Length: 168
Image: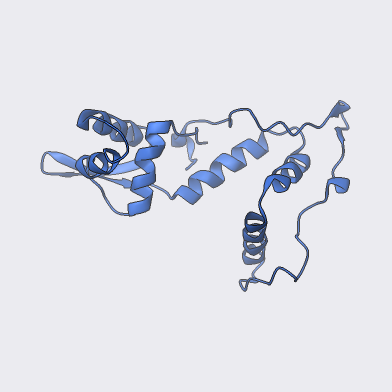
């Protein structure tokens, strides 16, 4: 299961994902230097750490390496969402709360994704079928086993684990 990337790891991986090709430390460094002051050795260390954690693979090119993402940013995001969702005491309530935080555009993307999964790959217009998500009324207000009220606190950190365990 993945752990959320640190701020600098995310900045480096964003470039690796965006460019979608093997990259050198120098390329990442030059792009990062447009936003911040950073040393070559810092970028090299971050890419080495990402390699050790399983986020990138590398191939020797002369005395240096070229680094390439092992998976996509979408797969990374999906693994983080899945990990957070599976940690919930009430997964249905967590989904309802999550859907309630979505913008109209995000809900449309969700509806399109559900149609793709169900084999209907043609997106529908917004006036078409209602969203295929449970309503708040369909989700119990408390965990029946413990009678614990459901909360929708989203301010905490995402739970995570090591990406070497198969998460992306």
